Length: 85
Image (cartoon, rainbow, N blue to C red):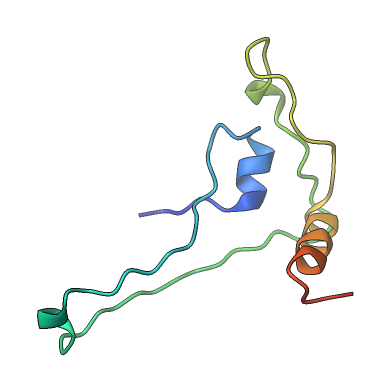
């Protein structure tokens, strides 16, 4: 399974939708069993452009986002989350 993040969603003009993080506890009878998850987070270099790909823009899907770099996007997100002032 691959979850799409906000940067890739923006880069594809929302053709690929960002996954909402959620955790659901298993039924009570499975509480004693092991569950494994191996997340891998990838972040592009700060200078990488997250401009909407031209191939993801057409009459039915106009460009939804202004041009931005990965570093600028991360900075905005950290401020939105209250993790940075």
